[in-house]
Amino acid sequence: MVNKDFFKALDELEAERKIDKETFIQTLEAALSSAYKKMYGEAKSAMVKLNPEKSTIKIYSYKTVVAEVEDPDKELSLAEAKETKKSSKIGDVVMVEEATKDFGRIAAQTAKQVVMQKLREMERQTAASELAEKEDELLTTIVKRVDDETVYVQIAGSNTEGVMMKNDQIPGDKFNVGDRVKVYVKKIKDSFKGLQVQVSRSNIGFIRKLFELEVPEIASGEVKIKNIARDPGNRAKVAIYTDRPNVDAIGACVGNRGTRINTIVNELNGEKIDLVEYSEDPLEYIARALSPAKVLSVETNDSLNMSQVIVPDDKLSLAIGKGGQNVRLAARLTGWKIDVKPESFLKPAQTEASNEEVEYELTELSDEDSFDTMGDLEELESLDDELTEI
Image 1 (cartoon, rainbow, N blue to C red):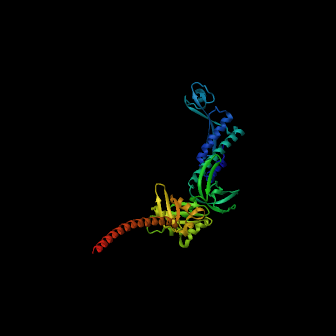
Image 2: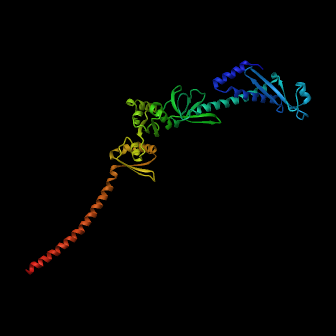
Image 3: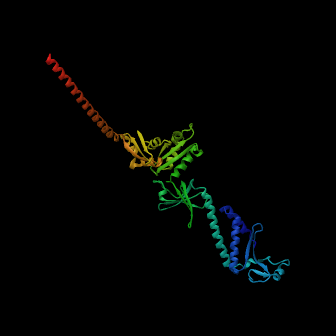
């Protein structure tokens, strides 16, 4: 069988779908051998050899030379072997080329099914290998279709779709077919339905990658992100720090006139971002995390992993945030449970303590005054007796 077009198609398949031709040829040889056996019986030993250099496909049946034949499909006598090759001896394998024109329609269909199955498997493995490198990465994709509240995006450079569920979208996101949209590759898994790529815009990884993209100092490692707490579409807190004294971590993220942070906020549909400078001192870190509220004092209980924060009375609502959002995000960012109290919370306790102290002092003073007064009376009586005698 000579078919240059067939081998040319294999070359194109390797280039377009990035499938290794040698592996494909091995699979094809196994498939054609299987088809041949189906046609002539499973008991018969046969093999198919493809030669891309000569553009040939040849089928060989083979038998082992034995002294006494027990299985005619796989063995032949020494006398029969010598008719084909005079130098044959016991134990040799004699191969005979078979006419490929004898292949039937069923055999060809069987070979096609096996090849297509292997082709899909190889494509899936190739795609999985390529996409595995894209996990935890930021990609620019094109919206392929929108099905109810689920968005399907085309991942550039592959035939794979990314799936973005409703909870992976930022509130307020609107998508139309053909839109270019940035997504974060959250997870890649191979299931019975094929390769599934889960992408997200609500994941904290999306913000992390946006900062790496827009802030060169973060991409280079000069400024590092310690942690991120996020309420998608509303507010996010990003803790950053640097080991280099000459680098302004906050300034680097904000950019000249706020250009860098504004680009990130615009991508997040206006989601507010609080930049928090990380500190190894938990008291300072917790106080900074409650930004933009002013904090007067912080106390922590290591055994309970709890902290009590005192803020001015007029800053209590700001510290807590709408629906408790600010304190909730600060707690997630720092890893501490945070109990926010107004400054006036301390005053009743201080007043009560002061009253007790005053009462105690008054009691002590009253006793002393009584004692001293009695002494004075005795002295006066003694003096009066003396004057009477005179």
